[in-house]
Image (cartoon, rainbow, N blue to C red; front, top):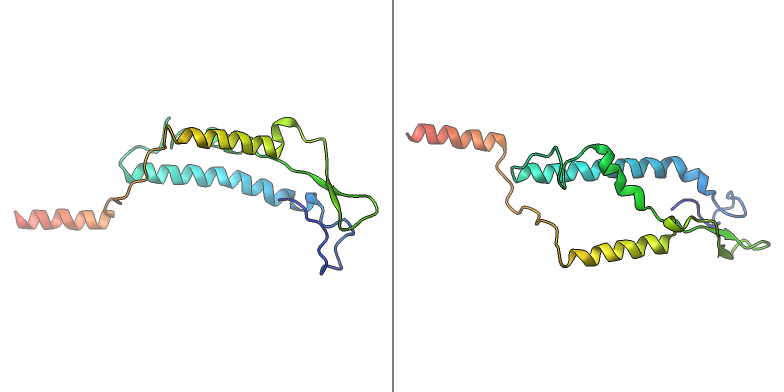
Length: 144
């Protein structure tokens, strides 16, 4: 979401509301860090089940691969109707590949496909911490 219509209780806003460009830097940063967050979480989960978090596969790959997560960002653009500060209309000019409806449709199709090929389960058992494992090995050595 970038920009907003004018709020009734915000007398300092412009007549048309808050410009979308006011949020640009923040939104781009959020998208960039989202890819890093997803890669980190996938790597953490792979490590929990004893798999290497680097290389190919679902949790690995380089960051460039993960940055493609935001390739399917959709846009819905609107503008105030001339002469009105409370009525808005859809604005044209959004490239077809970024139209929000089309992006959401593609996501729905992909999600439906998951019903026939579900993702790997999230591990339920968390491996012991290094300290707990060391204590266990020490106890085994003392028992011998």
